[in-house]
Image (cartoon, rainbow, N blue to C red; front, side, top):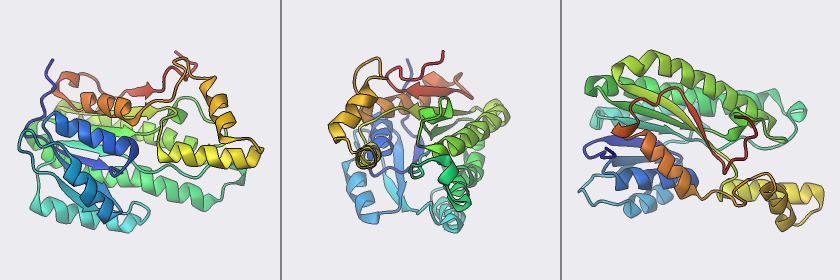
Length: 262
């Protein structure tokens, strides 16, 4: 199986913690040069220093705050002016706040759409020319199982994830002939800071202990535990490898079997 990414360059968004960081590490282990993208420069420096360099890779970082949509295009263009080769793009942005969808402000939808779909479109337009020149490209979107099975209490997130899925399928159909694949990875309940925060909020709202909230979630997971970020990172790295060249336009849950559909 060819998993070698030596000589390939990957841009990984939201990569200072959780699944994004795990994906960046796995890609580096396969030999890729990794550029981390996030908004906190100090954390970016720390994680960049942690990345494996067994194949003498050059890892970099780029500061972008996806909540400030207007800065995405100029920053990625300045980066590409210095480092034009990009073979892999991992889109990953923090999920919208929880709550009943009927209570969500219209502005929440607009902001989330900009941070996820508009940002992904902006980055793709910037890096796809390089992928076409190389005859090799991978776009992987880290979304949520809410794309396939809406999660109660995450109405805005469910809506935006669905839009992201449609965007990904459309671009996959257009770019496949150039050797560029586009896929979605759908994390379930994963041991990240976001899950901790959601559980804390639910515990307060229901007057339950955090342990009780976690146990309620575990009842719906056939493997009986939450997923580790590294497990999801490994799936992302595989989709970026030469071995996954025929996987295109798919949405792959990494949720321990939580989704009830086939």
